[in-house]
Length: 322
Picture 1 (cartoon, rainbow, N blue to C red):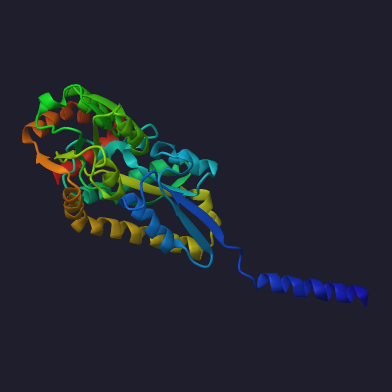
Picture 2: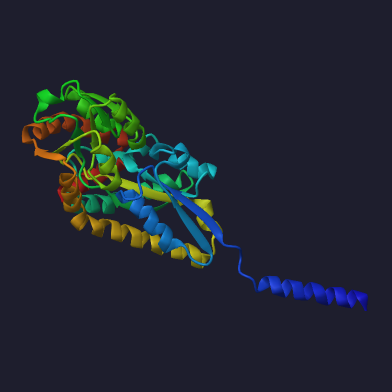
């Protein structure tokens, strides 16, 4: 009789547990950028869309735990965060293909950036997969321009300018033009600006990123250097640990986030410019400076193609055909 009661109790316990949902998974997704810059808005949107009764996703902004874009893949692999957003060009040491969207004077509009992404997305995904990471979505940035303490109307004004650049290609372009570039993350550039160690920053005028720049750099020269991308990715093993239904929900959330991010660019550039002007930023267009930079950029883009390999060269060639 006792054995029968124990067996019955065990069966009831099993049935009760079988009827319970698995404990909800908890993810965090990090970016080095402010919450109201495009990547910050992206991770917030993704976190809200991906969260449900089986998964909660927490967005984390402003380089949490000191994490910069270049360190995000390792942070995801180590489990410091489950997902992250990185400025794509900083991932060049993993694979030169990630530098593609940031190449100088290749993309002049969000439409260009979307077309290039369509051609390169599978290459991005394949390279991330080799690191145990799954590509979620891409976020476009408004066109990169030159923020500076003083006006930079021409190449002469660029000479010896201590400028923050964001990847190896931009560093080489500005060095060839006579500036003193330093390739550093956005987060690391801010204290250098405040201390007077930098004169200029290559960046867009977007959101909170722009707000922090106009505190010390009242001039913006629109050179349309690039419309670069940030890429969001997650741990492949963490995604695989979810139920099939929840994993599909995450993928749909990622697709919806990318669609929204590109749609937002329709008004984002003009909104940024209006807000910057309201805060006293002086806008300028410098065609002579742009022409000189393009001339210095051409051999650097060619060199990138040689080092990136035939597959990357083929993507670039298809893009240029139109």
